[in-house]
Image 1 (cartoon, rainbow, N blue to C red):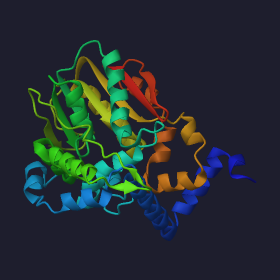
Image 2: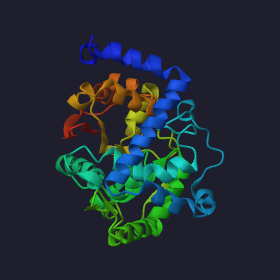
Image 3: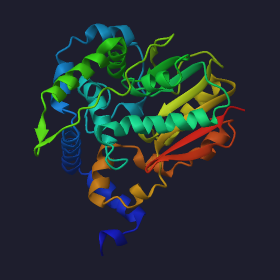
Image 4: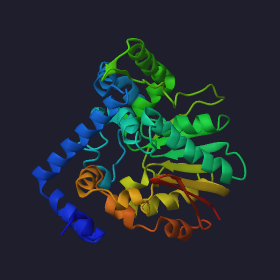
Length: 339
């Protein structure tokens, strides 16, 4: 029996069986991590240098300003994510998010390289601008991580007040720093690397500028340490609730709760927008078992995400039937209006 002849359900069960064996799961996580680091370096993102520069900074003051010490974390969140045993609750994952995003999105489009991440986010914003009947003035970015999606939304809608919400105070500390000039510092480091004409195989590497650096706007992002399913924010306080690359990291129970919370937070006529992996993409259907094993080793809720009918879940929560746009070869954008 060849790998291609194995049914998707059987292949999934085989992969889950492998990942249930902890030494094999740990090996898969290490392999996945090394693959990402090598890919980043191959496109001119010097993972180790970038992270070392961030690690040298004193982060505790930033953490103290964004963290709610008494926040209770949901059980699903206190687990391993993205090959980190501490999940999202630590400095190493927080300091590596941005370089990992560049690596993960480098091959969405042919020859996109380090610009793939910005291209992906722009494709999402193009969908929003085409479908939203009016420009939002208040935006909630749930699962904002280190602020890449927040800054990109702020740049796309410069007159809006954008709030970035995340469960990880470490991510939010990095977001706060980035918003206060840290992204310009990172861009400066990359410019120096470019000027030194670092080469691989006798070809000069292209070192990208920071594509999500904040542009001057009337408002700076607000950072909120909270659970997306229980934000504590007032009813009907946003025009747009956006979730960029969040839902594949959620169990179905949390996904449903977050969609219901989004409806509560939206003003009448406001919109929920979700950009994430497209389960119907041929990329995932044709993914080699080895690569799929590495992916699933870092994404504990991927099976639940792929089996959730997200469009029907959104409609059942009190939204119009969503529109679905395939904004990349492996991503979809879902937009629905609050009824």
